[in-house]
Image (cartoon, rainbow, N blue to C red; front, side):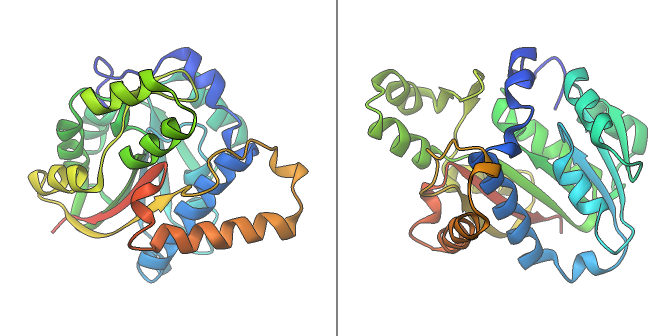
Length: 259
């Protein structure tokens, strides 16, 4: 992201911190990680240089750094509040750096990483295509980018169910909506996002829906039995890969390759 473009505000950071402690956040991270492993498990069996761009509190970065293979994981985020949270939970295996994609290019140069993550970032930028181009520049040829952003059909489903006419009209007219952490964001259809990826000369390996049927579960993870959590994750994992259901995910997870 470019700092001058980012629509994320300090209030959003305060509301997002601890997201993984609720079922909605827990589902997001579990499904994203499982689907990354399903596609890139063999790729991640040898040490890789990884950048978690806009990595926030660092859950994805710590997950990758915690694998048996010693990946070199760097987390970059322009938000001081998020960096403070990432630093608080870091055990030293992740390098935490303040900055955006422009700063990353200046610091590391082009084609510097085998894997780049951009989860919940592009959806806040007024020029998402420009951000995709910068992410592609940071990735080596043959490397991968993991992209997680809001899904349009999933948002339409949600606001139809809650009869939120203002949100429905906004999404229909502009693709934008106001999300659960009080931020203005853009929701993409899979076709729209695929077109953007093609313009950035990135090849889609596969994509998944995230939170297809359990978007309204706001319970703390610790209040839900392990048996029930596992049942929810198992069902959401199935739906995330279902050709008919995945478009209805609240978020769409694309894993792409730089040729």
